[in-house]
Amino acid sequence: MARTAGSHSALTAPRIRAAAQSLFARHGFAAVSMRQIAAEVGVQVGALYNYTPDKQSLLFDLMVDHLDDLMRALDAEPLPEDPMQALEGFARFHIRHHAARPEAVFIAYMELRNLSPENFAQVEALRHRYEDRLTAILTRGQAEGQFRIGDPRITTMAIIAMLTGVNTWFRETGRLRLDEVETMYWDMTRQLVGG
Amino acid sequence: MARTAGSHSALTAPRIRAAAQSLFARHGFAAVSMRQIAAEVGVQVGALYNYTPDKQSLLFDLMVDHLDDLMRALDAEPLPEDPMQALEGFARFHIRHHAARPEAVFIAYMELRNLSPENFAQVEALRHRYEDRLTAILTRGQAEGQFRIGDPRITTMAIIAMLTGVNTWFRETGRLRLDEVETMYWDMTRQLVGG
DNA sequence: GTCTATAGTCGGATAGAC
DNA sequence: GTCTATCCGACTATAGAC
Image (cartoon, rainbow over all chains, first blue to last red; front, side, top):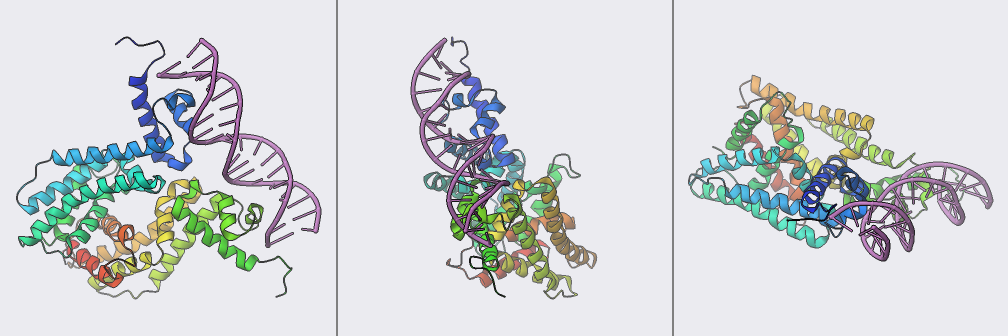
């Protein structure tokens, strides 16, 4: 694995990703320059273009990786037969997963309009797949008479907006621990579906 | 009311506001240039500075006016003694008011990080005053035993996130009318508080 | 793989004529 | 109040040396 002196791609690539994520989350995609990213990594701006064709791809890759990660993590969760238990699993998973990566979540929600149309369509498709998992749980629970809800798709949007909202105010240093927040939001979710 | 030829301030001022709001909502504050705003209005860049000291003030004024408008409109609503009726009034008002001005709402949520620290603090204070109105309703309903909820402040954040989420998917041309959406979200809100 | 240097464009804001 | 002209800095992306 001999490498030329000055060749650090295995190290540089993830550092560029991390710097871009941190800076995009703090200042917004449009407000961050390639020079700032390079400075955060500790290289000159030209070096970035060995890793990304352009700034847009940097953003797109962050979003796609975040959503792939989200789907993989959800698929790794147990999925109980009982709709109420499945819903509890989803709600707790959603809060836990999102609270653990606030920067990626923030970017995925705030920077959609800075994606090119093709990239936007791909990201929306991935997000939709995630939402569909919750819709499936709700539809099943409604059919089995456990949930007192209206349109499962509308209920999906309402629950996801409510749960994701935790990220706007939750801080690890705050008065509540995350597992307490999880339980409070699960209580609200359960009541919301009439459980 | 005689005016010098070429003097159109009474007309130009609101057109600058409207252009800024539309462009900021579509492309984001950081991605929009003063030249773009001027072009949308039909003037040259220099003319904008007769109406605003800088680009930051344009954003700040949009946010403050939006939140002032929100508070005034809420204060104009009836506030029933009964907490359940008060909550229904709030939920329906929130959806109706936000759905009617999607651009202002979008900017108020997405561009907070582009405010200067002083301006951010002022905007946050205004938003907090609005949230407090809902917290007051929830606290009263909890004390009177009508609501089965945990922390009223957390419940406030959850309900507002859920209701505001309507703006991410609702379109006037969609399959649902706004008053139907209002009722569906009120049903979910009622169940969420254990009613 | 990283560097320096640069092309070519665009940004916010201001000065001064009308 | 609006215009033109301009300052001066910053931007993305590329070229070519090492």
